[in-house]
Amino acid sequence: MRLVAAIVLLCFILAGCGGSAQPSATRTASPKSSAGAAANGPVVLGAKSFIVGGGIGFGTAHPSKLVVGSDPSVVITGIRWHGWGHRNASGVGRYSAPQLGHGGDYYRKPFRADLRVSGIGTCRRNGPRTCMALKVRVTLQPGQRRSWYQSDGSHGLCSYP
Image (cartoon, one colour):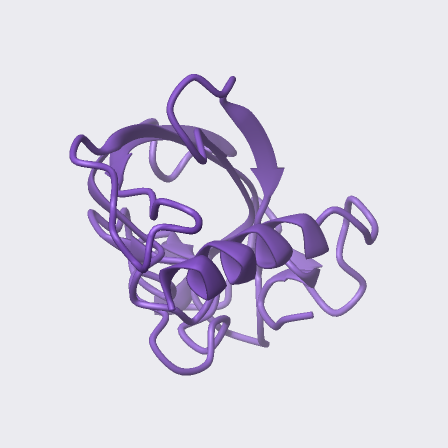
């Protein structure tokens, strides 16, 4: 089951590599927007409905826990953000990587996960200001070089794919 979870995570992360830099179904927030309270509220990470079935952290401001890929085994915890609410922000957390081919076991020590969010826009008219792009850098197994993966869909973090 954990092997499937790792494969799902990898597919989810790699599937976000396509698409345009500015998603077509979203709008960039205007600096002089008069959209009311939503435009003045906190910046959130994508839409709450970005990951259907188990996605935790999306639609919230500076989440400390993020479940990526609709699978509860793909979780980044203890995230500390720097520069949240600005056009670009970064975070650091811990990722428990499943051991591929070992019957669903995890490596004993969690790995570092680096996160970068960028592009503030909105997912819907009069919706909250939203970070539109997410990149995650993780190690999938010990000794492997950490790599960056684009984690948003073709419409940014508003809807997948």
